Amino acid sequence: MNLLFIGDVVGKGGREAVRLLTPDLRREFNCQFVVINAENSAAGSGLTSGCAKELLESADVLTTGDHVWDQRGFDAEIDRFDRVLRPANLQKGQPGRGWNVYRNPAGGEIAIINLQGKVFMRESAYNPFESVDEILNNELPKSVKNIFVDFHAEATSEKLAMGYFLDGRVTAVLGTHTHVPTADAQILPGGTARQTDVGMTGAASSVLGREVKDVLYKFTTGMPNRLAVVEKGTMRLEGAIVTYDYLTGRASAIRPISREINL
Image 1 (cartoon, one colour):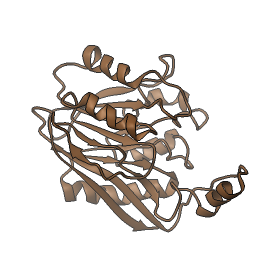
Image 2: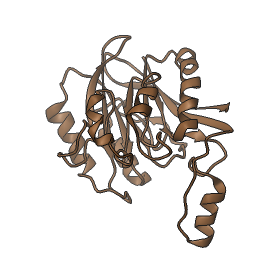
Image 3: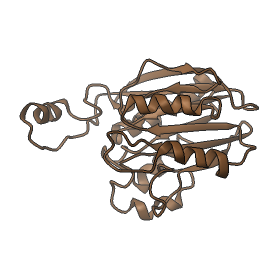
Image 4: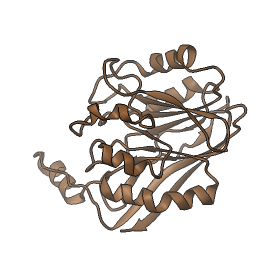
């Protein structure tokens, strides 16, 4: 089996890149399931029900992160979407769900777990190591073998540690949040695929999807200003394809991908 995981989608341009490129990627790599991190899909910060519906035409599941509540009103809407996740280690009173089990159209079940890191993150969350331990040991049905984790975190050390912590217990640990793909995709000794960050889906000529001149002004002057999202020009879709045995849940390959399209 092959699963396509697409990194942080930024703004309308990122959403359009997903719409135009995902069908071809599904066919080219024979991907039976698609997961997309969508937490920057609404004007570069957060998610709306409209953006969720749009992206779910291309994805089987959407994950999020520390910007999940940035768009006003989405906290009242997320429960309408059983295919949209928020980090599982947020405070328990928050709406939505942090993990779920889905039926793979090609056969078998897939669990998707969404986690948020603690190191250098703006919002506090429960310990992600303790939270995922609780999910795997006491909540997730033992019959589910195919388990994919989106670890939305800032620190590479925390992401690397999570990969080793979950090696042999999940199919893949895929990092998001920093928007820059790392060159460390590998299969760990226990059969878990790991990449510290799979990258983003947004403007190729930008700073994390934002206008270069706006970001440079902030860095060179120290003054706050609006960081506009780049919506036109060359958009780059980044992510990874994980090949795994659906009977055992063990990964055999992970392949970083990058595709561009001009809008």
